[in-house]
Image 1 (cartoon, rainbow, N blue to C red):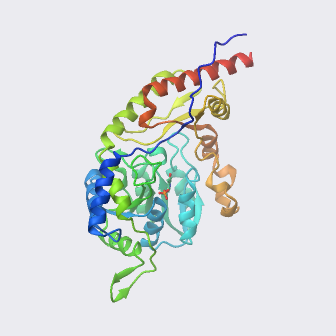
Image 2 (cartoon, protein in one colour):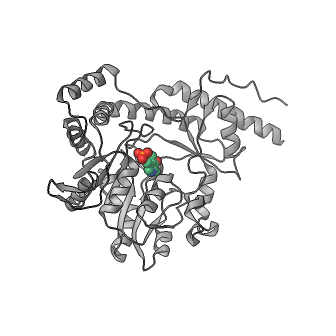
Length: 386
Ligand SMILES: *Cc1c(COP(=O)(O)O)cnc(C)c1O
């Protein structure tokens, strides 16, 4: 039985993402300015410029830079003075759940929508108890939560809404940045994210009072020389990180165009492969660092894990993000909300998702070659089954 010759493997490993960097010379120029000023952190001119530019780029009223996305979550949760239980998704990165635990809050898991992979509003409503104070949604892979439904639940039941927008830097709903919804949103500017400062993040809010608390909390809770008014931490972004951000922000448009082209190749070549679907973000003007495939094990010629392992044979390291749900972490404990029957959709999604490489230098050729490999693997598996 023949299924053709295998495509040639890549000679160097291909990972899902690669940080984009401004030309080194332009960063060195910024470093010279920093050296001249002697200001390395504590809200220097690079920091102020990046805050301004990001606020304009996203068109949001208040944006406070911090040292990471995790810090952004911690500060948003603390600034809101939350207590008790917070309803959240199990299909997310560890930072979401860890931030709740660090703030002494009890995570209560609600199932996700099997299509959008974000919190199911009906499941959220069912999870509310007298101890619930907030909903923590995640715009996973840049796909926005059902913000209207969550907002209406929150308004009716007197809850706060916080979003982990680490994946959703450029996601919009209509003309509005997704980060402008809810009481506060946390952005991550980690090197693996679509816009980055190597390490960094930001808290976005529409509420000036909340913004002031975040600004105090990121600087030890210091109000002025005379008074320290909140138990803050050191969550500041340095001038070196801010300068890098000013450089990478300028590359946003070009990067988005290249990501779109790569995504178009994947979509064109993989549409029609039985049981395999490309998860399209809800809006076309958004950009994320993810190209998400779902492999339905009941229909596809091969399972997600077989696809992932097969690609490794070609030096392509796709990632099945969140294959381990947060509800399964040992330190989270045996919460009733973490039981498998409560999280059926999340379990299904966690077994189907795989992210393909998506970064500028991969190019359309690279994506085309990866599609050849996927088609080859599918064909080989079909042949073996016969
Ligand atoms: C990356 C990420 C974070 C954490 O951001 P850091 O900047 O790495 O601290 C939080 N939540 C999600 C969903 C993420 O992907």
